[in-house]
Image (cartoon, rainbow, N blue to C red; front, side, top):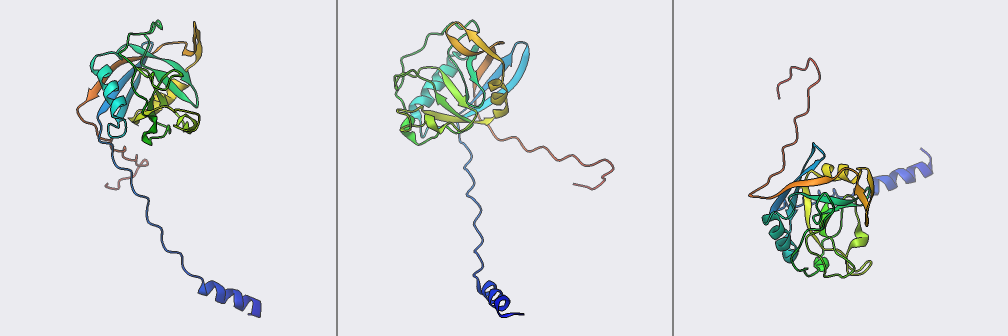
Length: 219
């Protein structure tokens, strides 16, 4: 072994072994309350979107949302604005795009530290930061430009989709048209057939992997 190779070998041997990294801290399971949105399009059932609401971080928005759910306000409303790689918005209009009456607007809670990340649910509003009523949107990608302080007052996140995010993805890709003042309106209405508060929710167990043909191994 020449001198240079010997020096390199000694340096490698003397190099400290990196300490093993601790596994990331698991995200705590959401505690709810939980709301399920049963969604249809035409005669087809698209599936159910389950939302975990974060009352700790967004108490005003959560209580507002639950009041609309319990009153049946969302039943029969549509996702009237859907945009691929952005979000889907609903909770305010009938399939004929007639706006439903609402209660007074609520305070904007966008300073609560919750980000507009993929799968989160936020209150929709006008240019007035404190104008949100019944309408909400589901982020189908990270939309952090909607957070407080980046482009102004921000949009208040108050929950996250814990089941059925693939349903929201499909809705975002539905063909759209212009209907009166509404751009990005689905050509075939995407309807929240029913919105209901759940007594409890738990994640579905992962499906068991299928065995290859002829495999007689016991589980």
